[in-house]
Length: 368
Ligand code: F6P
Picture 1 (tube, helix red, strand yellow):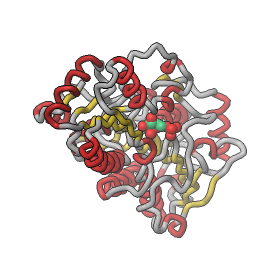
Picture 2 (tube, rainbow, N blue to C red):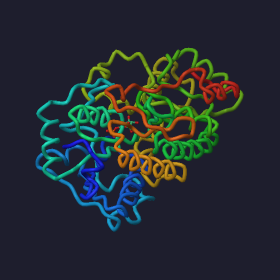
Picture 3 (tube, rainbow, N blue to C red):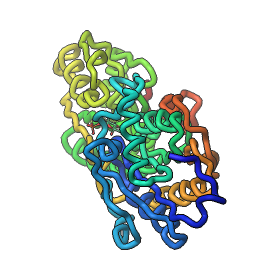
Picture 4 (cartoon, rainbow, N blue to C red):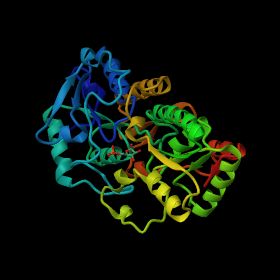
């Protein structure tokens, strides 16, 4: 694959490969449609690979993307190209650990892209997929990255599309739980996704008026939390707790050692419920609700649609200008280009000076 030279390439059709990789989220289709729309009028051609990087490996699976094929998809959740968060190109194992992709796999992908006459790639992915993309860029493949994850935990950008929709889903659920918790006088532990980052839990918890917000970033003192619950139940009669799936429970389990531990965080609210029931029997009537993949599915909300379109436009323009090995990012409301490096998967975590965390504290919401 050659570095693009606009003087040489100007008379030829530019063929861009699009890859949607990693866990899906709301807004991916809007990015794909925007990129295709931006370039089609200028003669760009697009190939969309099936199931992320897997489609670029042998046997290749891909389809041509044109205006017709992306019409009416921007409001749809998921990805029309399909995706996977594991597979031969996976640059991550376990909790945030990354590894170098097998050089033979990288070479196979590069050879396949060359055989299709693909000039460069726009990769829509999270930390693992973009870490993989950076290894391809190191081989000289022209790549622009677009950050995507409901977790909003990529340091490279203030915000990822999919996050706002996930928060909206969690808020709607927490609102519903409030009424049943009140009727029954129960303590509900409502588990939000986000892996080792508590952004969804924090934002949804504050927006929905959760009584406590338990985050993975800080240790949880069980005795202190139960003390809060006791007091709160006396004054309010019920409690709704937003629990991040990644909270640290100091379990003797080997969960953190397992290869795909990231996908096994689910259930921490259930474990917490069991711990409270065992260590403080009969104190509360507890229930847990795991919101799970409802936060990833469905249509993007207005904010995510706009963000997805802005990222799509920026990715195409960066491509057109030959600004490869970069990621489109948001900094203080402005789209900027950040370098696409192996450090892409540095996790952005909630800190205690975060204004949303501070707001929760000022309102008397219990936080760990
Ligand atoms: O990273 C996105 C995410 O939805 C996390 O919030 C969650 O822990 C994980 O992916 C779930 O992965 P899977 O879809 O493999 O269950």
